[in-house]
Amino acid sequence: MSDRFTTLAAFREALAAAPGPDPDATEGAQARNRQLTKPPGALGRLEDLAIWYAGWRGTDRPRIAAPQVIVFAGNHGVTAQGVSAFPAEVTVQMVANFEAGGAAINQLSTLAGAKMDVYALSLDTPTADFTQAPAMDEAGFADALRTGWDAVDPGADLVIVGEMGIGNTTSASALAHALFGGAAEDWVGRGTGVDAAGLANKTRVVREGVARHGAAGDGLDLLCCLGGRELAAMAGAIARARVLRIPVILDGFICSAAAAALEAACNGALDHAVAGHVSAEAGHETLLRNLDKAPLLALGMRLGEGSGAAVAIHLLRAAVACHSGMSTFEEAGVAGG
Ligand SMILES: Cc1cc2ncn([C@H]3O[C@H](COP(=O)(O)O)[C@@H](O)[C@H]3O)c2cc1C
Ligand SMILES: O=C(O)c1cccnc1
Image 1 (cartoon, rainbow, N blue to C red):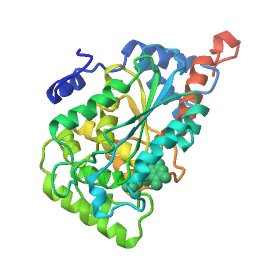
Image 2 (cartoon, rainbow, N blue to C red; image 1 turned 90 degrees about the vertical axis):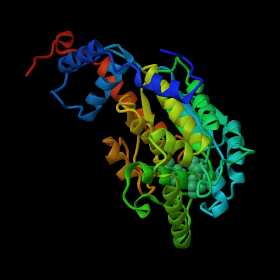
Image 3 (spheres, rainbow, N blue to C red; image 1 turned 180 degrees about the vertical axis):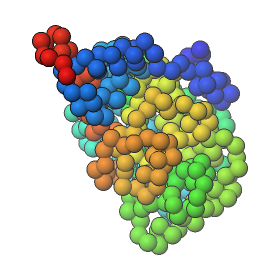
């Protein structure tokens, strides 16, 4: 298995060749779960989460010691169409805020004991406006995928990818519409808070983008035409985590759209990922349903940055702590049912 890809074709091959979870660890975790001092199934979904995590980590008694949060930032040519409530300069300003420790994701990463890394992708050169041309050319797209791929720490035992990019809900909506069909209206939401006229304008932009690029090819081709560099980098990081068998918690609408492009290109590409939350952004719930992923949380969050997924780290930790720390009936001398 190649550890670093240089062409898009090699990326596709590495993803297709990625191993699944360890069947012995999964079976061992299932067996252990049956012996723990609780009625069968009493920890509900936490039990499934712990077994899923154990399988991917290759041990029936895992722990979460080294979570990594990676935030990717990109700028979007489509902001020229007036699709965001905020100006494009906010992207670079927020990168400075991440670096200074002042954003929501900084607090949540620290609280979860996660290392946080920030990557700004050519912010001075926004992608092309996708209503006029493909957002990226193939070389630029492969560079962004590779930035994400290389950003994953092979020593991490949990990965979260987040983003910052004014205009990127428009990009994510266009990608979701191209991947899953329906009408543009089904996939467009208010993002940072556009008004009704702004929503109608965004819908037009998404419709035009999909009319131009909707037949571009598979999920990765659509990501190249409609995505941004930070979406491509998120997809690259999720793919690398899949290859390294590191579980991923997906964040909101933008992260999920980038992830969906991978799954469309390669069935099973997201088997190592759970949905951390359902965001308030219109379209996220439908997108998760299309991915067959039930969100862990529904808190009305609509921030991105990896924030919803970072909150969900605590839930996954709760699941793994019970699974790996509890005594069995035999160890505790508790009578079975
Ligand atoms: C201060 C600020 C911090 C943010 N952190 C994440 N986003 C979120 O909002 C942006 C997407 O919304 P739209 O498509 O409407 O531009 C992304 O940068 C996303 O990460 C932010 C937005 C702002 C304004
Ligand atoms: O769900 C998200 O990821 C989201 C929603 C609105 C704005 N930024 C991000």
